[in-house]
Image 1: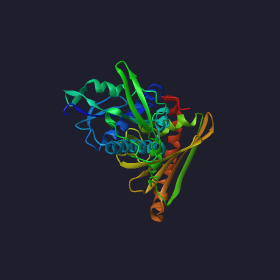
Image 2 (image 1 turned 90 degrees about the vertical axis):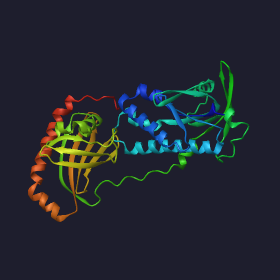
Image 3 (image 1 turned 60 degrees about the vertical axis):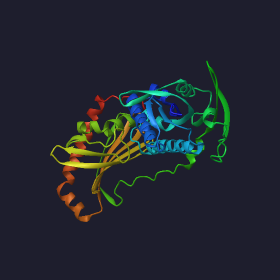
Image 4 (image 1 turned 180 degrees about the vertical axis):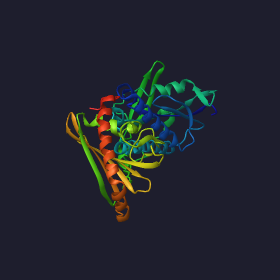
Length: 359
């Protein structure tokens, strides 16, 4: 038994099309995050041989685990994968093609039992053997759908998988190779999506607040281009007066709940949390300070295909003393600063090129 064991390959379907047709940098980050999700969902002591672009080759030496144990692992990875995908869909700030297309990615899992051995390359144990080849050959098959669990007959060992879950429908097939046919059974995992609880919207803003400043300007640019320019953290200091830099962004793909630090030119540093809503006609991004005293709203409204209204709104929480002090000491100064910032943005947006076509 020392050279026999389970081969377990979760494979992200849609990856090839995703990275060849979509924006490369964001797709790389999305796939990286999803692969980490799968690794963290490993609860059965599987070892990692290697990460193969869009898939992970897991293995475990020893007698074949019972099918229910394997299924529980498949379910855990599939549900964690899609829970992350769904959460990202309604929390993402970015509207590039890669981020929008992430929702269409899905997962298939290949499981096989056979003979293999390994050799060490630094911290990795590379696997070799005919059954490693078999497992990889099974990734390319004629199953029309792309979210399923495939189990070879070598792993089934004359046992029926029918009783694992009542909703499962099993189909029989075989992979033709140069050395013969590899018989297997497979079942779709799509019904599991209905069992994944939806995450409630994050409560990140100020519930009871009052608008203190509102400054607007119209721009001869489409809404997505203006949102990319004004919403991008790395560009903020180029147009928003008083800002020196945005740093310590908590995630490489900003989304609802992302935290960042705003470094002001006067040396002050403020931590903010981002919340967001999007429609093709109106985009609203808000940043609330960590003490929930103030929120700045960046509002983009589509006038037509080539014209957008951008509004900066400042809210303070419902505290009469705080609001009175603001009116007496800061309101006029900050209102003028916002107006100059919108003028700065008109000049700056002409220098910015979109990395992808988001239409």
